[in-house]
Length: 370
Length: 260
Image (cartoon, rainbow over all chains, first blue to last red; front, side, top):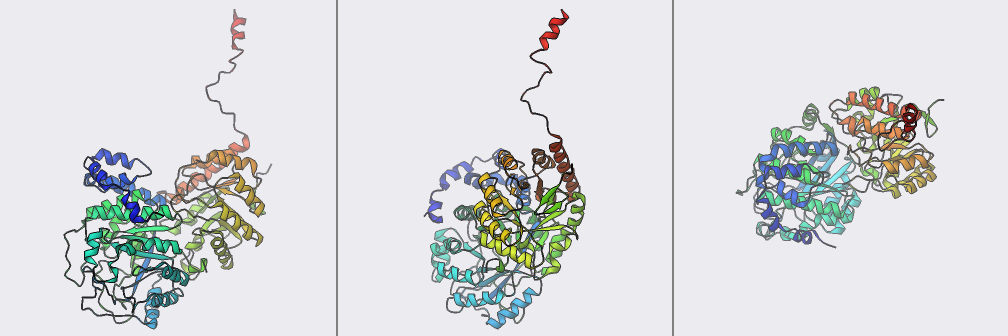
């Protein structure tokens, strides 16, 4: 069976690069007139030559999104249960080398946090931990899931890459979704950013969504962290990753996301800042290439920006967010990154309605499969 | 002669069934149903939070309408069966539209799993309406499994592409004795009229109304289209000719001979 990395080798970026040199407005117009886009079309929509056709791309992306998803926007809240981490990712506050306030929630504290989030009407929860098999072991995550499934209808995990058996164990406990970002699809850069920690294994991480899908995960969300490398290439490969998974697992719900680097505890700075225009270009290009894919937008982005890009292709947003462990009920710790939209769940719901969207709180229930 | 539509022993007055998803504001659903004069509305059980009934879309469905819960989100027969039982236990009634979808790209229904679910749920006393790919062999099995109607798709869900499966739906209409309700892909009132002219018993559509800039007006347009199509079917459409037809092409020369 061909893996994603083997599939990637069949895509000749040399040829694509050559063709993208000649892209004009009429090339893009012709792509926009088609219903099904090829891999080459996707590449060209991400090219510099397409940037002059941004409005046309956004218009088409909006109509494709409305047809596929209607006016619904799903809401969820992240819950950080441990920030102890053995990795050295220089772009993350939780990295081992940073002297931050470390916190690891007990099961009782998880209950308190969960109750506090559930009281706001949230039914879909995203559980996050740092990577430390000692403190945040798969068994600890399972215990957390067992608490959460009593309080939420749908649970997604965003934790370190797990083995097939571990995914299976968590699915059996009540998890239906996996979020895992490759951070960068550039293998060399990945190696240099993650040396010395358990995250160093590029292939183990990139194949995680596939292992989860094989184990029976219903939803998988993936993407790169924007700011580490060239955004065009990252967006192209993450789109192909979603495309590959959808073809391989037709029943899987695949989502992508475009998290942009935010201020964090370290000194990390980047030469690869992604502008708002570039964000819109990769959002529209991805939507047009993958009309069926969900697209998540986090509170890394401001309220103003979130409202503006929502119609172009977003299907899921977070609300009522704290990126600190214990941030919902008790004494908080250092946040993973600064959020840019601090609106409450209630406020986000009422803003969505005003903007012509239907906030959806409940879209799946653990009770349907157990 | 009375033109009646009987589904599962119930006399249904309206041949237009609508959905409840994709609206930007659910409070408009009541007005849409009124404009469409619908008797039946389908609701995705996955969107109904039985733990918080206050926020449910069901609250926007006026009393007296038939609720048709659907098993959207189910990927196999077992999940569809669980969702159906849960809906009934929570007071959503006896009707169920089985939707088993294994393909997120095209959202095509899985006929094999749907037949399995139909069998179990019909046995349990549900009025079962299976959403299906228009295939005669599968439709016959659904009839044998105890379905109350069959619901073939006209085109992929939400695509607004119209009656792409026309030939196959025509086969179902002529071969299946149960009501054939055309579901999915109907994008314009003319598409609805088209299948009704063919003899479909009813149509179910959601996207075309819910995502219209004026859902209430669009609902009314669909009501008229369904009625027009039905009446045309009952009246009997004239035969279709490939070219223009003169009134007496073979014997017209006789008149001109007479004149000489």
